[in-house]
Length: 108
Image (cartoon, rainbow, N blue to C red):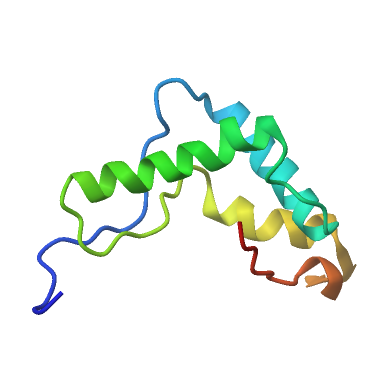
């Protein structure tokens, strides 16, 4: 990119028509639990079909539409994504267990 981008996005994006919100949400939390428990989530067919694939497809649709700076396709309530782990793994008021708060990089 040689000049300032003409198109970017704020992130929010509808789910593909073949995925319902409840299935996406269920497999989001299945993936989350797998990550915090240090298990390989990439071999799980449900996580792939109902979580990873819809996100990758949304990224591709944004790129195909000409978006130059693509943000994460926010398919569910971001507040819930942030607050639920704190509530589920709270060690003291509003403090999450450090083992469950770690962000890990995965290579496929």
